[in-house]
Image (cartoon, rainbow, N blue to C red; front, side):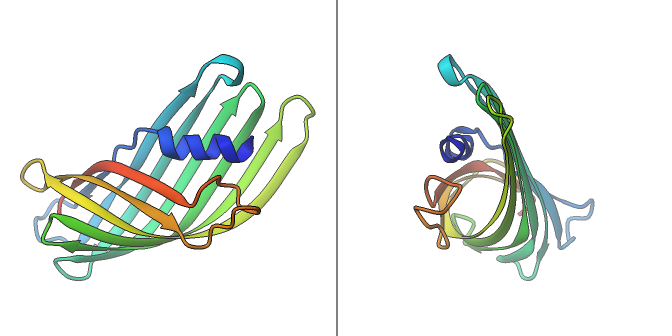
Length: 174
């Protein structure tokens, strides 16, 4: 159940991605992140919130590296869980039409089963590699559509039900 809940949190959440440069146009620092909210109905009703702030530095016009964190909070009729992750990321932009990216996350997971009051804690490493398409939406803003795959994912031992994570969002300040 834990794996299914986390997978649906990642897959079904609508992510808003924004990346904003500091006040000067020539600044190399970028800030932003993802945010999502999901809800369930029926026998497994509940709510899940996802936020993932990040800070980056433009090494060159097309290469960016930085630090990203993520926090997932889920409360359903069966369980309550939190997942915190932190790690570095790298993005390479191809002509502002496509991007390639990689990020490492070390996740720390806590879950409580409501019916039995049992508590579980674990951690898991993830190395995501992927990319996608970017559509210009305005001056320095782009719609990003893509996906990443966790190359460290193991079917029988991962907290996630799949290694694939789709991405939809906006990027500002490129």
